[in-house]
Length: 118
Image 1 (cartoon, rainbow, N blue to C red):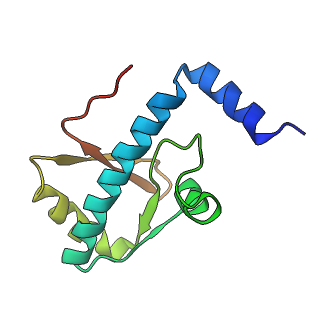
Image 2 (image 1 turned 45 degrees about the vertical axis):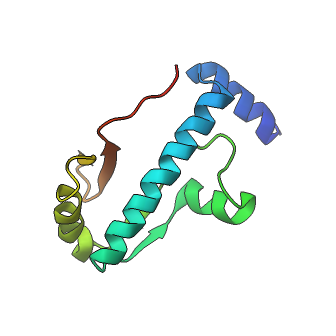
């Protein structure tokens, strides 16, 4: 069985991303999560961390070292409220929606002005 560090090393090589770039993405993601939390609190939207984000928060007290995104889930009833709330921050964020056609949608919050040193 391969160790997680072996898998992580292969991931970095395949995607040609340095550890420094992963850490930059993590800091941007954390900033976006703080904004997302603020939006949710202000608009009474319940959410939860899921997948790698929840695992990292519990197991690593932060991020899984190779995780470069933020995963959250909200209830369907809060979906429309979230779209309105994000629209109010249109100078900073926009919503990118992926529809998988199986009654599952991936709503991505994207920062308008972002720069990663690549």
